[in-house]
Amino acid sequence: MDFVFLVWLVLVLALVAGIPQVLRELAAARASILDGLADELTGVERSEGSRRGLAGDYQGRRVQVAARPGGRWVVRARVEAPPPDFTIAPLTNRRRLARWAGLVRDPKLADRVADDRFVLSSPDAARTAPLFARDGLAPRLDRLFGATVGAKGVRLRDGWLEVDYGDMVGRDPGALERSKQRAATVLRDAAALAALCERRQITVGGAQAIVFGWTGGSEAVRCPFCHAGLGDPSEPEVACETCRTLHHAGCFDEAGGCTVFGCEGRAARRQLRA
Ligand SMILES: [Zn+2]
Ligand SMILES: [Zn+2]
Image (spheres, helix red, strand yellow):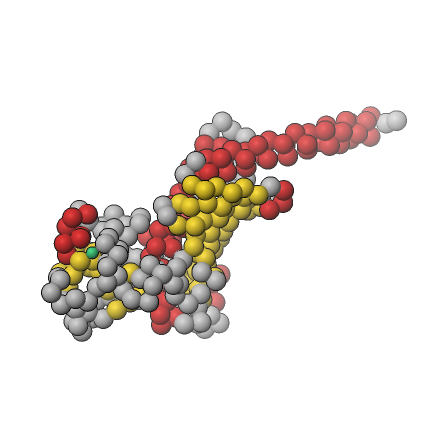
């Protein structure tokens, strides 16, 4: 047996012996990330095997998390009374070139900054695009598509808002902790995006400004704080300056700011209903 062959043999054996160990470590890391997320949910149901993941309620909203082999994670949040389905992806250089060459015709997103960063596909872009206006979905999408999370895509399909991202847990000591934080961020952002999708654009006083009414699963536009209907002329209404969702003025004051989950807007603009 020559020496080179012997070295190869030893290396191959070491590798084969090491693989189960690496797989065990990855499985333990996945389980630990799922445990961290389960702590934030109520009514948790777990699934094992290749469809490993969990489902439960997060801030009163149905969510699902799937940890696929190979480091793909999918976080889904239920959207009641959803707008038309859409897919949104970061605008890469390749897509930018395709758009410039006229090969891709994605609708404008009602916001120049968002247009420069995202590509939207939707069968009913006129209804979907305003949701991405700078103060709405765009800041959260920016974070999800940024380097920390590195989401591959966000889509709304069949009433579920879905975020797809990759996470191979590294072997350095802080890696698992970072993965857990990343998963918690995606969960929070997916729920916040779902909440923003439960609104529709409405016209107020003939104003050009984009204003949204929260529906929360019903047909009518309602106040996201007290859940009562809007549009009573005797009750003043205001729109959050950040996400532009209408509230009763009294409710907005009582809550000390916007009550749409994930929105931290504190200031309101007075609006007159048409
Ligand atoms: Zn109210
Ligand atoms: Zn708001």
